[in-house]
Amino acid sequence: MNAVLPLWFEIGSMIVLVGILLVDLLLIIKRPHVPSMREASLWVGFYVLLALIFAGCMFLLGDAQHGSEFLAGWLTEYSLSIDNLFVFVLILGSFKVPTAYQQRALMIGIILALVFRGLFILAGAAIIERFIAIFFLFGAWLIWTAWQQVKPGGHEEQGDGLAVRLAKKVMPFSDDYDGGKLRTTVDGKRMFTPFLLVLISLGATDLLFALDSIPAIFGITQSPFIVFTANVFALMGLRQLYFLLGGLLERLEYLKYGIAFILAFIGVKLIFHALHENELPFINGGEHVPVPEISTWFSLGVIVLSMAVATIASVVKVRREAKAHGERLHLGAYESKREEGGAPSEEPGGLGRHTPKD
Image 1 (cartoon, rainbow, N blue to C red):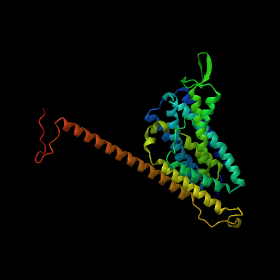
Image 2 (cartoon, rainbow, N blue to C red; image 1 turned 120 degrees about the vertical axis):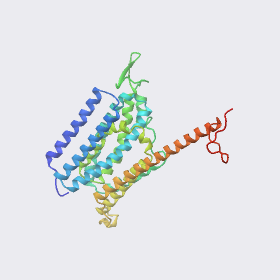
Image 3 (tube, rainbow, N blue to C red; image 1 turned 30 degrees about the vertical axis):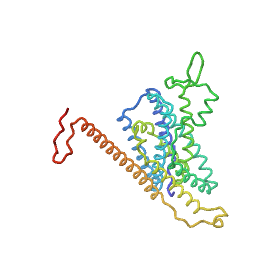
Image 4 (cartoon, helix red, strand yellow; image 1 turned 135 degrees about the vertical axis):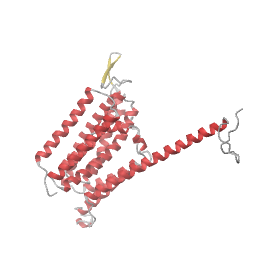
Protein backbone atom coordinates (compact mmCIF):
# COMPACT_ATOMS: atom_id res chain seq x y z
CA MET A 1 0.00 0.00 0.00
CA ASN A 2 1.32 3.42 -0.91
CA ALA A 3 -0.84 5.60 1.32
CA VAL A 4 -1.07 5.15 5.07
CA LEU A 5 -4.33 5.56 6.97
CA PRO A 6 -4.23 8.32 9.63
CA LEU A 7 -3.71 7.01 13.16
CA TRP A 8 -6.66 9.05 14.44
CA PHE A 9 -8.93 7.30 11.94
CA GLU A 10 -7.83 3.82 13.01
CA ILE A 11 -8.17 4.58 16.74
CA GLY A 12 -11.44 6.49 16.29
CA SER A 13 -12.91 3.67 14.19
CA MET A 14 -12.13 1.10 16.88
CA ILE A 15 -13.73 3.23 19.60
CA VAL A 16 -16.89 3.88 17.55
CA LEU A 17 -17.31 0.23 16.54
CA VAL A 18 -16.86 -1.06 20.09
CA GLY A 19 -19.32 1.60 21.30
CA ILE A 20 -21.96 0.50 18.78
CA LEU A 21 -21.57 -3.14 19.84
CA LEU A 22 -21.90 -2.21 23.53
CA VAL A 23 -25.05 -0.16 22.89
CA ASP A 24 -26.49 -3.05 20.88
CA LEU A 25 -25.78 -5.46 23.75
CA LEU A 26 -27.30 -3.13 26.37
CA LEU A 27 -30.48 -2.77 24.32
CA ILE A 28 -30.88 -6.55 24.25
CA ILE A 29 -30.32 -6.93 27.99
CA LYS A 30 -32.74 -4.11 28.78
CA ARG A 31 -35.51 -5.22 26.40
CA PRO A 32 -35.35 -8.86 25.27
CA HIS A 33 -37.80 -9.35 22.41
CA VAL A 34 -38.25 -10.77 18.92
CA PRO A 35 -37.67 -7.94 16.41
CA SER A 36 -40.28 -7.38 13.75
CA MET A 37 -39.38 -7.75 10.08
CA ARG A 38 -39.35 -3.96 9.73
CA GLU A 39 -37.05 -3.49 12.74
CA ALA A 40 -34.68 -6.24 11.58
CA SER A 41 -34.61 -4.82 8.02
CA LEU A 42 -33.80 -1.32 9.26
CA TRP A 43 -30.94 -2.55 11.47
CA VAL A 44 -29.43 -4.74 8.73
CA GLY A 45 -29.71 -1.85 6.25
CA PHE A 46 -28.10 0.50 8.79
CA TYR A 47 -25.09 -1.76 9.32
CA VAL A 48 -24.61 -2.37 5.60
CA LEU A 49 -24.78 1.39 4.95
CA LEU A 50 -22.30 1.96 7.79
CA ALA A 51 -19.87 -0.51 6.17
CA LEU A 52 -20.19 1.22 2.79
CA ILE A 53 -19.58 4.64 4.39
CA PHE A 54 -16.52 3.21 6.13
CA ALA A 55 -15.29 1.86 2.78
CA GLY A 56 -15.75 5.35 1.30
CA CYS A 57 -13.60 6.79 4.10
CA MET A 58 -10.94 4.19 3.31
CA PHE A 59 -10.91 5.33 -0.33
CA LEU A 60 -10.68 9.00 0.67
CA LEU A 61 -8.21 8.82 3.57
CA GLY A 62 -6.16 5.94 2.17
CA ASP A 63 -6.28 4.93 -1.47
CA ALA A 64 -8.08 2.62 -3.88
CA GLN A 65 -6.15 -0.38 -2.57
CA HIS A 66 -7.29 0.26 1.02
CA GLY A 67 -10.89 0.64 -0.07
CA SER A 68 -10.96 -2.35 -2.40
CA GLU A 69 -9.28 -4.62 0.15
CA PHE A 70 -11.79 -3.63 2.80
CA LEU A 71 -14.74 -4.24 0.46
CA ALA A 72 -13.41 -7.64 -0.64
CA GLY A 73 -12.58 -8.59 2.94
CA TRP A 74 -15.94 -7.44 4.27
CA LEU A 75 -17.90 -9.32 1.61
CA THR A 76 -15.85 -12.47 2.20
CA GLU A 77 -16.34 -12.32 5.95
CA TYR A 78 -20.03 -11.43 5.51
CA SER A 79 -20.61 -14.50 3.35
CA LEU A 80 -18.77 -16.70 5.87
CA SER A 81 -20.76 -15.08 8.71
CA ILE A 82 -24.01 -16.04 6.98
CA ASP A 83 -22.69 -19.59 6.93
CA ASN A 84 -21.91 -19.18 10.63
CA LEU A 85 -25.46 -17.95 11.12
CA PHE A 86 -26.82 -21.13 9.55
CA VAL A 87 -25.09 -23.17 12.27
CA PHE A 88 -26.41 -20.74 14.93
CA VAL A 89 -29.92 -21.58 13.68
CA LEU A 90 -29.21 -25.28 14.21
CA ILE A 91 -27.82 -24.68 17.70
CA LEU A 92 -30.71 -22.51 18.90
CA GLY A 93 -33.19 -24.99 17.46
CA SER A 94 -31.39 -27.95 19.01
CA PHE A 95 -31.43 -26.39 22.48
CA LYS A 96 -34.98 -25.01 22.05
CA VAL A 97 -33.93 -21.55 23.24
CA PRO A 98 -36.98 -19.38 24.15
CA THR A 99 -37.63 -16.97 21.29
CA ALA A 100 -37.44 -13.86 23.50
CA TYR A 101 -33.88 -14.75 24.58
CA GLN A 102 -32.49 -15.81 21.22
CA GLN A 103 -31.25 -12.26 20.63
CA ARG A 104 -29.18 -12.36 23.82
CA ALA A 105 -27.68 -15.72 22.87
CA LEU A 106 -26.88 -14.47 19.37
CA MET A 107 -25.27 -11.26 20.61
CA ILE A 108 -23.06 -13.09 23.09
CA GLY A 109 -22.14 -15.54 20.33
CA ILE A 110 -21.18 -12.63 18.07
CA ILE A 111 -19.02 -11.05 20.80
CA LEU A 112 -17.29 -14.40 21.37
CA ALA A 113 -16.69 -14.59 17.62
CA LEU A 114 -15.07 -11.14 17.69
CA VAL A 115 -12.83 -12.10 20.61
CA PHE A 116 -11.65 -15.31 18.95
CA ARG A 117 -11.12 -13.60 15.60
CA GLY A 118 -9.24 -10.74 17.28
CA LEU A 119 -6.83 -13.22 18.90
CA PHE A 120 -6.40 -15.10 15.61
CA ILE A 121 -5.73 -11.85 13.75
CA LEU A 122 -2.93 -10.88 16.15
CA ALA A 123 -1.42 -14.36 15.97
CA GLY A 124 -1.82 -14.56 12.19
CA ALA A 125 -0.23 -11.16 11.57
CA ALA A 126 2.76 -12.05 13.77
CA ILE A 127 3.28 -15.41 12.02
CA ILE A 128 2.95 -13.93 8.51
CA GLU A 129 5.52 -11.26 9.29
CA ARG A 130 8.09 -13.92 10.24
CA PHE A 131 7.08 -16.89 8.08
CA ILE A 132 5.49 -16.07 4.71
CA ALA A 133 5.32 -19.80 3.88
CA ILE A 134 2.38 -20.06 6.31
CA PHE A 135 0.28 -19.09 3.28
CA PHE A 136 0.85 -22.61 1.93
CA LEU A 137 -0.84 -24.00 5.05
CA PHE A 138 -3.58 -21.35 4.99
CA GLY A 139 -4.32 -22.09 1.33
CA ALA A 140 -4.43 -25.86 1.81
CA TRP A 141 -6.69 -25.43 4.85
CA LEU A 142 -9.16 -23.28 2.93
CA ILE A 143 -9.31 -25.71 0.01
CA TRP A 144 -9.94 -28.58 2.45
CA THR A 145 -12.62 -26.49 4.21
CA ALA A 146 -14.29 -25.80 0.86
CA TRP A 147 -14.52 -29.54 0.25
CA GLN A 148 -15.94 -30.09 3.75
CA GLN A 149 -18.52 -27.41 2.95
CA VAL A 150 -19.98 -29.17 -0.08
CA LYS A 151 -19.67 -32.82 0.86
CA PRO A 152 -22.77 -34.55 2.32
CA GLY A 153 -23.25 -33.79 6.01
CA GLY A 154 -21.37 -30.51 5.86
CA HIS A 155 -23.83 -28.88 8.27
CA GLU A 156 -24.44 -31.14 11.23
CA GLU A 157 -26.30 -30.17 14.36
CA GLN A 158 -23.94 -28.77 16.94
CA GLY A 159 -26.03 -29.39 20.06
CA ASP A 160 -24.03 -32.31 21.46
CA GLY A 161 -20.50 -31.25 20.56
CA LEU A 162 -17.43 -32.24 22.55
CA ALA A 163 -17.39 -29.00 24.58
CA VAL A 164 -21.04 -29.44 25.56
CA ARG A 165 -20.56 -33.09 26.56
CA LEU A 166 -17.58 -32.17 28.75
CA ALA A 167 -19.56 -29.36 30.41
CA LYS A 168 -22.41 -31.75 31.21
CA LYS A 169 -19.97 -34.14 32.89
CA VAL A 170 -18.36 -31.60 35.21
CA MET A 171 -21.26 -29.22 36.01
CA PRO A 172 -24.86 -29.73 37.15
CA PHE A 173 -27.51 -28.48 34.69
CA SER A 174 -31.24 -27.99 35.07
CA ASP A 175 -33.68 -29.29 32.49
CA ASP A 176 -35.49 -25.99 31.98
CA TYR A 177 -34.54 -22.40 31.21
CA ASP A 178 -34.93 -19.60 33.74
CA GLY A 179 -35.36 -16.65 31.41
CA GLY A 180 -31.94 -15.57 30.21
CA LYS A 181 -30.15 -16.55 33.43
CA LEU A 182 -27.08 -18.78 33.49
CA ARG A 183 -27.81 -20.17 36.98
CA THR A 184 -31.00 -21.13 38.76
CA THR A 185 -32.20 -22.95 41.88
CA VAL A 186 -33.94 -26.33 41.61
CA ASP A 187 -35.24 -27.94 44.84
CA GLY A 188 -32.87 -25.77 46.85
CA LYS A 189 -29.84 -26.72 44.76
CA ARG A 190 -27.92 -24.23 42.63
CA MET A 191 -27.56 -25.40 39.03
CA PHE A 192 -26.61 -24.04 35.65
CA THR A 193 -29.34 -23.57 33.05
CA PRO A 194 -29.24 -24.89 29.46
CA PHE A 195 -28.53 -21.29 28.43
CA LEU A 196 -24.90 -21.82 29.45
CA LEU A 197 -24.73 -24.90 27.19
CA VAL A 198 -26.01 -22.74 24.34
CA LEU A 199 -23.21 -20.22 24.90
CA ILE A 200 -20.59 -22.98 25.12
CA SER A 201 -21.83 -24.47 21.86
CA LEU A 202 -21.85 -21.05 20.17
CA GLY A 203 -18.33 -20.33 21.43
CA ALA A 204 -16.99 -23.67 20.16
CA THR A 205 -18.60 -22.99 16.78
CA ASP A 206 -17.10 -19.49 16.68
CA LEU A 207 -13.66 -20.94 17.35
CA LEU A 208 -13.96 -23.34 14.43
CA PHE A 209 -15.24 -20.63 12.08
CA ALA A 210 -12.40 -18.32 13.06
CA LEU A 211 -10.01 -21.00 11.73
CA ASP A 212 -11.64 -20.53 8.31
CA SER A 213 -12.41 -16.83 8.20
CA ILE A 214 -9.06 -15.41 9.30
CA PRO A 215 -6.93 -17.28 6.72
CA ALA A 216 -9.54 -16.34 4.10
CA ILE A 217 -9.27 -12.61 4.70
CA PHE A 218 -5.48 -12.72 5.04
CA GLY A 219 -5.61 -13.98 1.47
CA ILE A 220 -7.04 -10.58 0.53
CA THR A 221 -5.11 -8.20 2.76
CA GLN A 222 -2.27 -8.40 5.28
CA SER A 223 -3.36 -5.24 7.10
CA PRO A 224 -4.49 -6.22 10.65
CA PHE A 225 -6.65 -3.07 10.83
CA ILE A 226 -8.55 -3.94 7.64
CA VAL A 227 -8.82 -7.59 8.69
CA PHE A 228 -10.32 -6.68 12.07
CA THR A 229 -12.69 -3.96 10.87
CA ALA A 230 -13.93 -6.18 8.03
CA ASN A 231 -14.72 -8.87 10.61
CA VAL A 232 -16.49 -6.41 12.92
CA PHE A 233 -18.68 -5.05 10.12
CA ALA A 234 -19.44 -8.58 8.92
CA LEU A 235 -20.62 -9.60 12.39
CA MET A 236 -22.55 -6.38 13.08
CA GLY A 237 -26.18 -6.85 12.15
CA LEU A 238 -25.83 -10.63 12.08
CA ARG A 239 -28.25 -10.89 14.99
CA GLN A 240 -30.96 -8.94 13.14
CA LEU A 241 -30.19 -10.86 9.93
CA TYR A 242 -31.06 -14.07 11.81
CA PHE A 243 -34.61 -12.85 12.41
CA LEU A 244 -34.89 -11.21 8.98
CA LEU A 245 -34.04 -14.35 7.05
CA GLY A 246 -35.92 -16.70 9.37
CA GLY A 247 -36.41 -20.04 7.63
CA LEU A 248 -35.04 -18.67 4.36
CA LEU A 249 -31.52 -19.84 5.23
CA GLU A 250 -32.60 -23.45 4.91
CA ARG A 251 -34.01 -22.70 1.44
CA LEU A 252 -30.79 -21.14 0.14
CA GLU A 253 -29.60 -24.58 -0.85
CA TYR A 254 -26.82 -23.45 -3.17
CA LEU A 255 -25.39 -20.85 -0.79
CA LYS A 256 -22.91 -23.36 0.61
CA TYR A 257 -21.55 -23.97 -2.90
CA GLY A 258 -20.98 -20.25 -3.40
CA ILE A 259 -19.16 -20.00 -0.08
CA ALA A 260 -17.13 -23.13 -0.84
CA PHE A 261 -16.08 -21.67 -4.21
CA ILE A 262 -14.96 -18.45 -2.49
CA LEU A 263 -12.92 -20.40 0.07
CA ALA A 264 -11.30 -22.57 -2.63
CA PHE A 265 -10.55 -19.50 -4.78
CA ILE A 266 -8.87 -17.66 -1.89
CA GLY A 267 -7.02 -20.86 -0.98
CA VAL A 268 -5.56 -20.99 -4.50
CA LYS A 269 -4.75 -17.28 -4.31
CA LEU A 270 -2.88 -17.82 -1.03
CA ILE A 271 -0.82 -20.66 -2.51
CA PHE A 272 -0.01 -18.50 -5.57
CA HIS A 273 1.07 -15.67 -3.27
CA ALA A 274 3.24 -18.07 -1.25
CA LEU A 275 4.85 -19.35 -4.46
CA HIS A 276 5.45 -15.80 -5.70
CA GLU A 277 7.12 -14.85 -2.40
CA ASN A 278 8.73 -18.29 -2.01
CA GLU A 279 11.67 -18.60 0.37
CA LEU A 280 11.59 -22.39 0.89
CA PRO A 281 14.81 -23.99 -0.40
CA PHE A 282 13.10 -27.21 -1.57
CA ILE A 283 10.74 -25.27 -3.91
CA ASN A 284 12.46 -23.88 -7.02
CA GLY A 285 15.73 -23.65 -5.11
CA GLY A 286 14.32 -20.99 -2.78
CA GLU A 287 13.64 -18.63 -5.69
CA HIS A 288 10.32 -16.94 -6.47
CA VAL A 289 8.04 -19.05 -8.66
CA PRO A 290 6.61 -17.12 -11.66
CA VAL A 291 2.89 -17.56 -11.02
CA PRO A 292 0.11 -15.04 -11.74
CA GLU A 293 -0.74 -12.56 -8.98
CA ILE A 294 -4.51 -12.33 -8.45
CA SER A 295 -5.54 -8.70 -7.90
CA THR A 296 -7.89 -7.49 -5.17
CA TRP A 297 -10.39 -6.17 -7.73
CA PHE A 298 -10.50 -9.55 -9.47
CA SER A 299 -11.02 -11.22 -6.08
CA LEU A 300 -13.83 -8.78 -5.31
CA GLY A 301 -15.54 -9.64 -8.59
CA VAL A 302 -15.26 -13.39 -7.94
CA ILE A 303 -16.72 -13.00 -4.44
CA VAL A 304 -19.70 -10.90 -5.58
CA LEU A 305 -20.38 -13.13 -8.61
CA SER A 306 -20.18 -16.35 -6.55
CA MET A 307 -22.65 -15.15 -3.94
CA ALA A 308 -24.98 -13.69 -6.57
CA VAL A 309 -25.06 -16.90 -8.63
CA ALA A 310 -25.56 -19.08 -5.54
CA THR A 311 -28.37 -16.88 -4.19
CA ILE A 312 -30.19 -16.52 -7.53
CA ALA A 313 -29.92 -20.26 -8.23
CA SER A 314 -31.35 -21.01 -4.76
CA VAL A 315 -34.26 -18.59 -5.23
CA VAL A 316 -35.05 -20.01 -8.68
CA LYS A 317 -35.12 -23.53 -7.27
CA VAL A 318 -37.39 -22.49 -4.39
CA ARG A 319 -39.82 -20.85 -6.84
CA ARG A 320 -39.84 -23.91 -9.11
CA GLU A 321 -40.50 -26.20 -6.17
CA ALA A 322 -43.26 -23.90 -4.93
CA LYS A 323 -44.83 -23.86 -8.41
CA ALA A 324 -44.60 -27.65 -8.71
CA HIS A 325 -46.12 -28.02 -5.24
CA GLY A 326 -48.97 -25.68 -6.22
CA GLU A 327 -49.62 -27.69 -9.37
CA ARG A 328 -49.71 -30.92 -7.37
CA LEU A 329 -52.21 -29.40 -4.95
CA HIS A 330 -54.33 -28.19 -7.87
CA LEU A 331 -54.22 -31.65 -9.50
CA GLY A 332 -55.12 -33.28 -6.19
CA ALA A 333 -58.12 -30.99 -5.79
CA TYR A 334 -59.15 -31.73 -9.38
CA GLU A 335 -58.96 -35.49 -8.84
CA SER A 336 -60.90 -35.18 -5.60
CA LYS A 337 -63.60 -33.20 -7.37
CA ARG A 338 -63.76 -35.80 -10.15
CA GLU A 339 -64.34 -38.54 -7.61
CA GLU A 340 -67.24 -36.52 -6.22
CA GLY A 341 -68.67 -36.23 -9.73
CA GLY A 342 -68.11 -32.51 -10.18
CA ALA A 343 -65.11 -32.45 -12.53
CA PRO A 344 -65.48 -31.89 -16.28
CA SER A 345 -66.04 -35.07 -18.28
CA GLU A 346 -63.06 -36.37 -20.27
CA GLU A 347 -65.34 -38.13 -22.80
CA PRO A 348 -65.17 -36.94 -26.42
CA GLY A 349 -67.39 -34.00 -26.94
CA GLY A 350 -67.95 -33.71 -23.22
CA LEU A 351 -66.00 -30.50 -22.62
CA GLY A 352 -67.72 -28.50 -19.95
CA ARG A 353 -70.27 -31.24 -19.14
CA HIS A 354 -70.50 -32.51 -15.59
CA THR A 355 -71.37 -36.04 -14.50
CA PRO A 356 -74.64 -35.93 -12.57
CA LYS A 357 -74.29 -36.57 -8.87
CA ASP A 358 -75.89 -39.62 -7.29
